[in-house]
Length: 446
Image 1 (cartoon, rainbow, N blue to C red):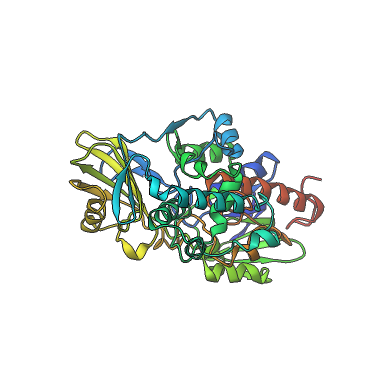
Image 2 (cartoon, rainbow, N blue to C red):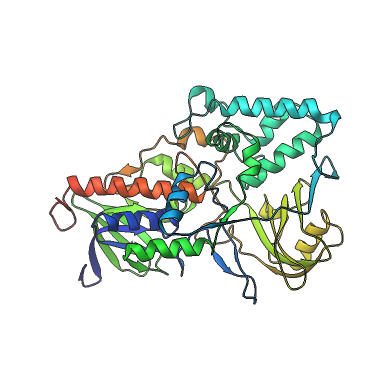
């Protein structure tokens, strides 16, 4: 790699060190390209973060967790096999509770009195999922489901119990307010799982043995590329011969092409010259509707328990690990305004609402919504935006190639989708470098 003063020259610069960016950098290095990866955070992994809980030596996932390698997620299965990494499963709870219709239930949550409404809701959702052509833009038929989950459920006219059940599962999967998130996200998951409503709940069990960091580290170690962390990007300019990426501290990287693998919310904070397709800016300004909250709490006073439902700010709660005293429990909410994830008092109250007798001994969390380099949790399409964005904008814009789990046309908002997007971005970039002069004036790899 060459440096001229403050400017470095490579074949490709990758902006963003989550799973999409690391995958793209690794695949470009496999193709013989000289790559530098720029990451704003002081670590790789993006919206995954495997670290110790509080001051303990117990490591847990503070961001993306489940990978579903046995449920149609072929990319993650391939990566884990390549690096010899296995999976572990979340434990089955001794007690499964449901907060539905204003009351707590155990066992199968639907009684005879709600069976017809439950059947009706499942039939409608499965029929709607069959209109989704997985990995393709929304058709005219499927685009009519680009409405909020709340609006769709209003139209079904089902009982409060059935509505709460569907809402709880949709809210957990999509991580946002039901009046904001598009039903398309839920239907796309179902379509990817052979139009199964059950798999939306049942597939979320597998975790990477050793954590997401283990896979990220293995990928970047194989890549052998230069990684510059704590390096936010200010601007990206492309011209007839290459791309110049300028960091916030004024350093420049000149390359034949660039992969832009940052969360959708952050595109608006980078100055692109010339401007990107205007649809990128509209999507970035409207923002990712995924605003999930996630907490980890060391608790006692309860047996291993999972709760799914709509009572209080935590809509899914589950004990994941045993501790010397009590258990380590994780919980998810849909709305950051409902819960301060840093307040042990707020979390105690939220857990007590669904698990009487629970005592919170310690709390740890990362606020992804306040994180300046994500400004939200995993991607969930905002109602009305999916039909404009989903799979409709080419990932290549001149010498720039867009990547990320936010924009993949298949498994949006997942590690699987991020890896898939990184693979596609690397292949597209290799093609650009093979057919056009690089920043040094000669075709790359020709």
